[in-house]
Image (cartoon, rainbow, N blue to C red; front, side, top):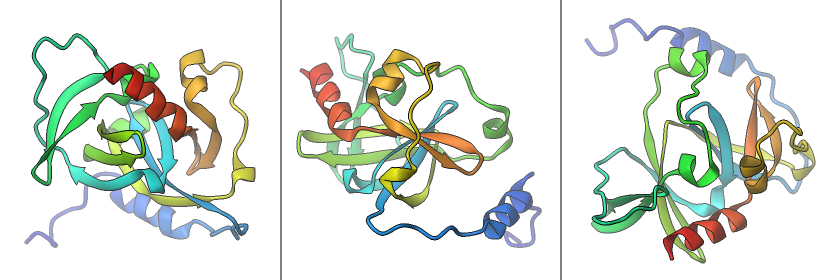
Length: 181
């Protein structure tokens, strides 16, 4: 019965478009990214930063904590990890969501990261599969990008008719550690 049900609206068109995409020849020396969405913003971080992507689970708030960047603690594989808001850390508008994102059925996930300066978990609205790119494919940021978002970005990457902000993981985790102190 599960396989006989009707697909969600837009599923067939999205799947057909994905299969019909022409694959471009990639230059050697490419790097892997995980692309994800927070509100209306598509962002990416290098795959080396990630431990895993897990389903959403309860986030337990910390008492007497006024820092809006830290959402609380979340249990991952029996260990409590610090859960951090990308939107607060990067200064993103959480109320802005594009029509395309609303029309698509998405599943929120938790990104479990590990960096030399510490581990963190980030809730995101949507996660896409890994993507390989060459650093020469990055475009410079337009002048209209807010200073907060531009500070964390290496550049923009064209992906599926939208621009993805490729984040500087060193600066991101440095700033995160500053907020945790």
